[in-house]
Every structure is written in C-alpha cells, then in structure tokens.
Length: 358
Image (cartoon, rainbow, N blue to C red; front, side):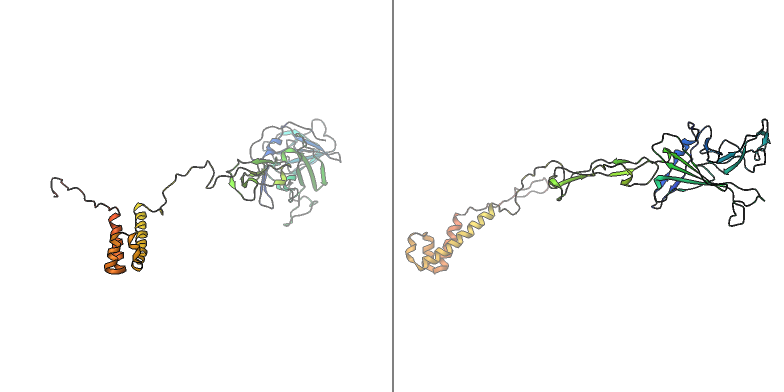
C-alpha cells in the first residue's frame, strides 16, 4: 500500500542524466515533480513500513527507543515492531542542539542522501532498453566496530544496508508511485516505483517542404523533401521505433520544374546569329559566282565562236584578241562595271581654333 500525496515544487537539479551504450543522453528532470510535502509510505510483506521521498531525505527520522541509531535520516527509513511507550523521547545523533523528539519504532536508515539528488549511483534498469526506467543504489554507513553482518568491502570495512530503487516508466498511471518492497533483507532492500515521470514522450517532428527538384525516377519527374524525426524533450535519442505507427512522409511528388531551375519560364529574346553573313559578304559571294560563270562562258566562247552572238561584246572582243585570258579579263571588267561601288569615307576638316585642316 502507498499513501498518495500531491507533489510540491522542488529545487532544480533533481533527477539524473545518463548516457546509454549508443552515446545518447537521457535527462530525468521530471523527478522534481515527485517531491512531496509528506513521505511516501510503502508497506512491506513482513509488516514493516518504508518512508521515502524524492529530491530530499525522507522526513521520517529513525530514533528507536531501544538502541541508538547512527544515522537518523536518509533516502528512506524502514520501521517495524510496536510503537514506543507514550512520552518516550530520543535525541537525534546529528542534532547539534541536542533537542529531544518523540522516539520511533525500531528502524533503520536504508541509505544516505536524497533520491534523485545526492548519495546514489544511477544506471538504467535495462541498458538495452533505456526507456524502461532507471535504478538508484544507496548505501547506509555502519558505525565503527559494528559487526559486519552484511559483509565487508575491499578495504575490510563493514558493509551497510543497500537500497536499490527502480523508477519504472508507466505512462498508464496518473501520478501515483506504486512501490513493491523486494530484495533480500536485512542487507539488501529493493523498492520499485511506477510513474509517468520516468517516461519520455516521443512524437513525430516534421520540417517544411523543400524546393521541387527534378528526379527521373519519380512520377511526374520531380520531388520535394522534408525532414521527419522521432524525438522527445530531455533526450538526444532519435529513433523511429520510439514513435507511434504512421510515420509522416518525407518525400512527395510535385510538378517538374522548367529547365534551368524552378519558377516561371522567362522568354528569351531572339538575337542575331553571329555566323549569319552580312550584306557585303553576300555581295562578295555573288561576285565570286559571277566570275566563275564568266570563266566558264569565256572558255565556251573561245571554243565555240557561235556563242559571240549571245555574250557581251567586251567578252567576245577580248577573247578574239587574247584567247581565254582576254575573255576572262573582259568578263571581269563587265561585271566590275555593274557592281555598286563602296563610297570612300573622308572625315570633315577639323577646326578647333588651334589646328585647322584644309
């Protein structure tokens, strides 16, 4: 059984930060919400009760009337047996003022420190499954000369009582911590607590869609992409299997962008072909063709005088005087007289007041 108590605000810094085997960090900062104004009380199967709290030592002190306790407070206090006689007073061993307070039942402090804050060694319950929860191990010191009923350490010192507290992720619970007193008393006690404060809420986080880019393997010839990540606050772990089924799509088809990039097609103004001939080049080609024709006709006029009736007189007269050479010169002169001449350009005279050109 457990007395459920509404949590109160606790100072920051309560809750471990652990690194798993893959180098991911898990911070259990929500343990501060489990700090309570009164202790949690767990009833063990042997009739004993265990009082504990988070972030601070248990409020319950261990002040048995029958024998002195070396430590009055710790992470948890286990009590058993009948209550002391009415009016019995005891002094806490760590009270410098030496005030007397009501004695308690027979008891023992199960570990020094404060659960979630100090005095404990933390690890994952299952290193292969970090999300399952974490385990704290606290030890209680033994007084000098006390029998080593729980064994000795490597230096020969008597071992104290060990308490392990498993804080299990249980998202189905509201706030209740449901402990079960386990272990192997009197030297080892184990407590299991179930709480959603040990859970991490993994959800899908999606980024904005990117630009539409060409992709020959996609329907429509183009796709756009976005980042899709399964993550949770207070951890660097990113893994799709931590999130619910139904992973959002990270690729979608889109209209293929025009060549040269996205956006509207910009019409290109036609430009003159650098290889296109200009007017003078055309005229030179025509002149060359006429010369070639003249050569052919001159040769024919020389070989066949009957053609003189259809050829210009300049061709035939030159052919009669000098043969083929004369016919070529006559044809060239005839063509040259009929091709328009390119006028020579002469700049106007300069008169700048200093130098005058005539």
